Length: 336
Image (cartoon, rainbow, N blue to C red; front, side, top):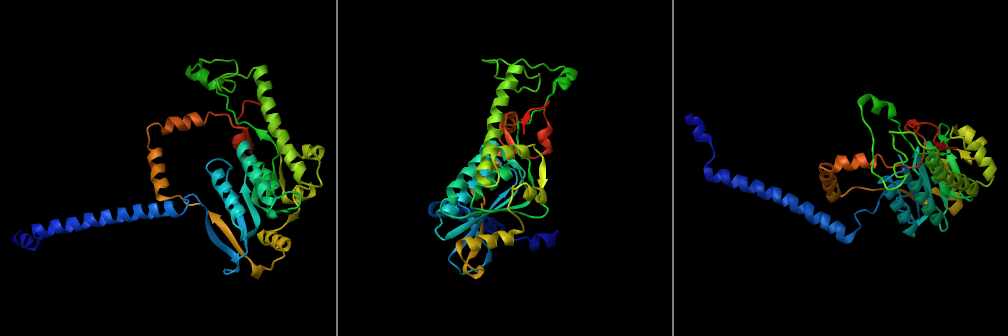
């Protein structure tokens, strides 16, 4: 015991060590704070970050690779749109390669990305490259390459799945078993038209069929407008909702060539009359700031977060999407 007392640091020294430790933590926190303030002052924290992909590291002229990965829904959509805008605004970007690996997603999101690509291709050539999957909404955004652009697919790519669906579960039997009855207070006959606790009425089916019919017609027309060798009638024959292999897609004129990313980049080099050593191929990445990470954690732990998620999951969303989840319907409620 005496030895322990002898080797214990003096009380004043212990307090000094604690103060140094606290000062260190405060210093680290202040450094994070001032770094975030610096970024927010000099740059937009949401701006995509440019990364070298291939080619010449010192070349001024650039080819931008814009990746469309995963389901096309928020917040993924906003990141893709910011990448398109950055490529459009950057005068050094001479062409764009749209790299797609997506089963599709929301109707509105797919169309917004396509719309921005149409604006982009007015000033810069766009070529699309499909990776493992570019189905439904993934095919929709590929049409952003336009008539003059080319669409490449890898030998093992799945594409097609042309159609629209609103996923809907029917839980009438389950509700009866557990004794649950839905009695919403509503202002009109169609306000709860997609309730999973009852059958759709003929009038409701007509209303929702009209909605998805319009989305389906838009999909068909977008393909017909951008594929020179296909007209509306021919596209409708392909729009059965089925998935096509790369070979089938080529035979049906949905794509132009079967090849990998290098072939798509070579096509762009030809379009802009450049050699591989004359350009720097870059990609974009969107990184969350420290503030966004902290705010995201705070929102996730908010007591209303689970309620908000539950409410959002019941919102009807027309989808250009290829997924087994699309089969969670009460019956034939889709268009192809």
